[in-house]
Figure 1 (cartoon, rainbow, N blue to C red):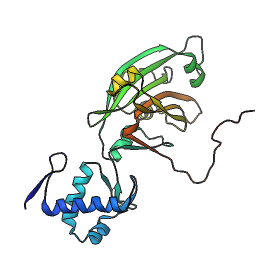
Figure 2 (figure 1 turned 45 degrees about the vertical axis):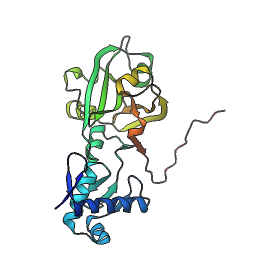
Figure 3 (figure 1 turned 90 degrees about the horizontal axis):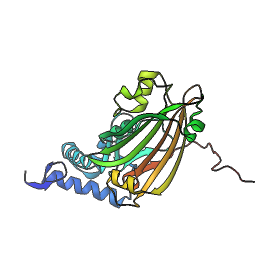
Length: 259
């Protein structure tokens, strides 16, 4: 079969497969499907496009390798439009590595700094720390996808809740460590999301120009007893992320009323 060239990751497609790639892209474009929308099942697409399942699977594998679509199996599965952005639901307690893995990305973590340090006034207040000289763990990590920086994560953790925390593998999901090694799970999470411009340090670490658009999330997580156990600030490169929100009708006041 005559080749038509490469389509990401060195994948060479034949003429029939390449034509199917173009037709799926046209279906997405002409149907005005948005990232996150489901365009159908493999069976339905095969019938709609009039192509055999083998050609369709090869085309879908190409598009998935380019993160233009994602495929899900099982009930409720199918082909979903993607656009290389990592999608994070605002009201989730899942860790970023799990979110990335489900969407076909490999997330890498680099520890930039990790130390035990006196608690700041904000730590004392937001983490509900007691005693005359409370201390916290301060950890800063760079998160990357496919070798490209995605976010910076600064975490502040009560040292008394997590003994020997700095001896753990800090490239792992912290929520995995909390659950596995300390029996602590997030039950209540308060997050604030806002758009900001990168400062010189953030720009250097994220390898972006100064004043690049970022999305910043400030988070405080509590366990089943209502104890705050994490204070974190995450900043994401805005062009590489999408935030979604799903609810079932519950309405919360959007801001505290001012008298």
